[in-house]
Structure formats: C-alpha cells, structure tokens
Image (cartoon, rainbow, N blue to C red; front, side):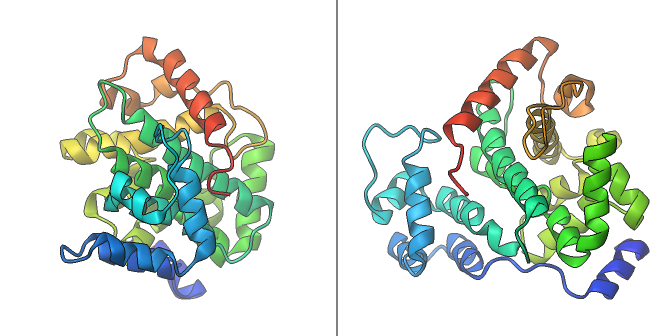
Length: 283
C-alpha cells in the first residue's frame, strides 16, 4: 500500500464493508454445494431486494419473452453469477453513509456503467465475460464511494472542481488527497474479496500506460472498465450534461479492446439505447 493511502486509511478508520446480504450471496455463489433454493432463501429475507431482482430480470436488459414471476424462476434462467451481480447492484446503495446529490451522481454512474459494460462485452471483437463486465462497470469507482464516505467535505471540493472547472476526478483527487480513487478502490476490492482480475481493473482503469504490461485477460477487463466509463461520461451519466469533447477513441483502452475508429457511433448509440431501456432499474 502506498504510504499516502495508508496514512489516509489510518486517519479515517476502516474502509467500507460489502453489504451483508451481498456478502452472503457472494459466498453462496462460490460454494459448490450451495443450491438455487439456498440463494433464493437469502434474497427473500429482503422483500425489497427480491422485488428489484425480479424487476431487473424482467427488463430489456435480458429480453426474456415470458414474464418471470418468481425468484426460483429468475435464478434458474439467469444462473448464480448473474443473480449475484444483480444483488451487488441492487445493494450497492447501502455502502453510502449518506445519499445526497454527490452520492446520487456516483450511484448513477456506477450502476449505468455496469449496464453499459455488460452490453459492450457482447461486441464481436470484445472478448470479456458479460457477468464480469457488469461487475467491473458497477464497482470500478468503489474508491470514490470510500473517499466520499470518509471525507465528505474534502470530496465535495473534488466534485465541485470536476463540475465547475471541467477537470477529471483523478486530477482533482490527486490535488486534494495526493492519491486517487483507483488506488483506494483496489483496497476496498481486496477487503471485499473480489477476484484478483477485478482488483487489478479497479486499480488500473486510469493508468493507460500500464495496459500493455498486464496479462491479456486483465488487460481486456481493465480496458473495458475504462471505455465504459468514457462512454458514460461522454453521454453525461453522473454529470450535469454530456461531455461532448471526450473522445473514447483517444484512450489506449479503445485499441486494447480491438475497437476501431468507425465503431464509436454505433457504441454511443447502443449505450444511449440501453441506458434509456434500463433507466431506474437499480434506483
């Protein structure tokens, strides 16, 4: 751990914990002896969460022709890993200590990046598992949540600089904290026992010069996190308005995924469509 990050953690205390129900579901998903009924029983402890899972399962995100009426049916059709990711998405809001405008913008960016990353993973040249894509899109900015939870007054200055001066979150964070959310987010990922590949993507998604040094699968997932956040920012997700001068093609992550210049318009159109179709799913 970088000394400046360790000093911050020492000053503010512990990092955010994974929501309790999500932790249980993650453990079940990794248990070869767990059954679909075990998973259903855990989710049904929280009726609001169960309702959100069914709402997402019946959305155009999955496109099933017949309505899914029960959790048992949803788990059978979607599988453990997908349901685990939906629980993560639906419960992520619990990680926030408060929920004002800053938190809503961070929440919106995280959940919508998850949706866009999952849909992007279906592109013919992008070889990334869709469930892992959703997770990295959802959790790539865990460090922002941790910073905002621990130091809300300081982080409000970061947000103000981003929105009023047009600089990046990373630039503003480094000026105010001397480190950025990607470094802290990797520590949260480690605490949550996410996979090493997800931890790497969270740590490196703002470090384009390191992409070529990563193993192929790590490189693809990291690049997908970067491109997804670029596309969402371009479309104004989690911002006051679209950032039209942001061109994702200029980032090394674009080429690392095998995308060409001609792919941009189609990807922006796809992202805008899926964001409209899934608006409010996790909120």
